[in-house]
Image (cartoon, rainbow, N blue to C red; front, side, top):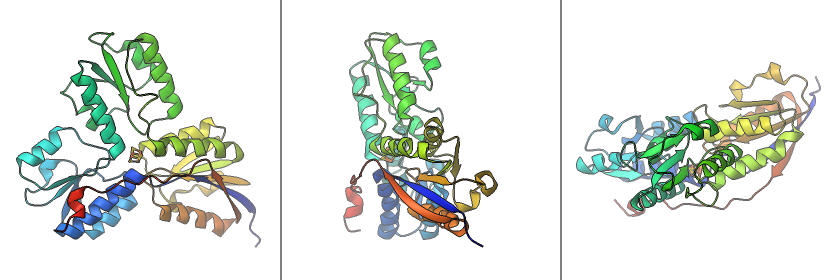
Length: 316
Ligand code: SF4
């Protein structure tokens, strides 16, 4: 039977970012250095495939530091942790390695600097996301006010409108965040913030590639996890850029082939925590059913790399 033709647009950049790459390396190098088990507080990155592969190598994933024994190393996930967590590990004299992405740590430092200057902080982020919990946890409880939407900006109660600063989660929608920042600046003209926002290069680049790709596609798939903020934003960006069927899949088995019936063009991208092996699995699933022509939609080149912490570069 002849296969129907399909143009498969592949977004670039897509998939792993430098912070995810570094976090995975940290767990692997810690297991090499100290042997298994090595404990990891929270999923090191939001991807089940990555977590399962590390578990097979000897990582044990837990939600809280209290679930770790004193005598085994513990790693903190790429999303960052409240200050109280490393403090508690130090008090218990544990070996700990912080895999917080350096671009998240930069936001932590910003928040602390503004607080040291006597400014009250507002964070633009998603409630309950580990990065938001980690960034808000850099300052005493209640010191950072969270806003998620433009509507929240209208009701947020601040101490002094003249002494305010804001930070953002790194994996937000660039366009939504611009609207929230504009609303903050309109209500609090004296508010201080980063030049634009704290959204990282990887989130920005992946969203830009989707904006360029989506209008060409009858349908679009984002390879990523349901709890991955940047992956979910890519689905929304795709839909808003004109691709009405924009869906998240964790891997090829999740593809709803019936919904794709009759398509002639397909866009594929992946969130920052999705490994290339899963993207290839999805492409192969299309090759099984269609006569595929792959076209790259490249909007940026990335060469960012982050070093692993010194303790892992030194011999045991
Ligand atoms: S998405 Fe951005 S902030 Fe998050 S780990 Fe990757 S580079 Fe770091």
